[in-house]
Image (cartoon, rainbow, N blue to C red; front, top):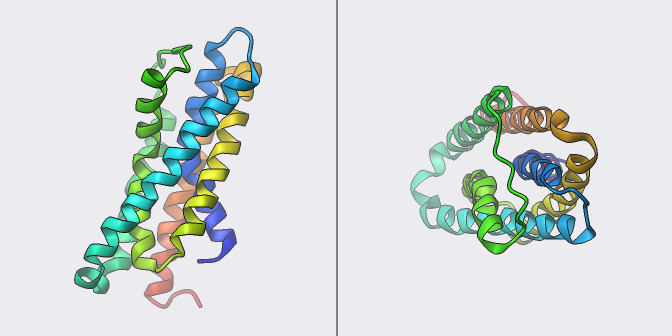
Amino acid sequence: MSLAELFIIAVGLSMDAFAVSVCKGLSVQKMKLGHALTCGIYFGGFQALMPLIGYLLGSQFESMITQIDHWIAFVLLGIIGFNMVKESRETEEEELDCSFGVKAMIPLAIATSIDALAVGVTFAFLKVDIFWAVTFIGVVTFVLSAIGVKVGNVFGMRYKSKAELAGGVILILMGAKILAEHLGFLG
């Protein structure tokens, strides 16, 4: 997997965290650097941890499903992507919580990184260098989450659904690319 492909996946995965960070930015009256760093650390950390766990799980079953690994990658990325697109179209208001404490942040970090677990399984089948992949995903998510807090504090909810939509489309396209490559449609 090329660096550009990994970057695209990292951005796609980080869109949920970015959207939640925007909401966290909305919830604070006066934004501080600590708010952005807190979101970045929690979301970036969990976004790096989950694909590692998925990779380790996927590596255990790799020999059993090598024949269909491309279909698994396609289906997992497609499902995650379609769910993100669907969420981007929902109009219900999300409850804003201004807490940046452990009890508020860990559930959010887990919720926004569950999809990265499935991507980690996909990485095991694709023989991705997991150390660099999770580091890259974690750093990209850290940066985008920190930016999201500022965006939310300045601009509001305007960009939340667009971020989720973009992330979903990116993951769907990456799944389709993996399948097309394996089936011989792409070089």
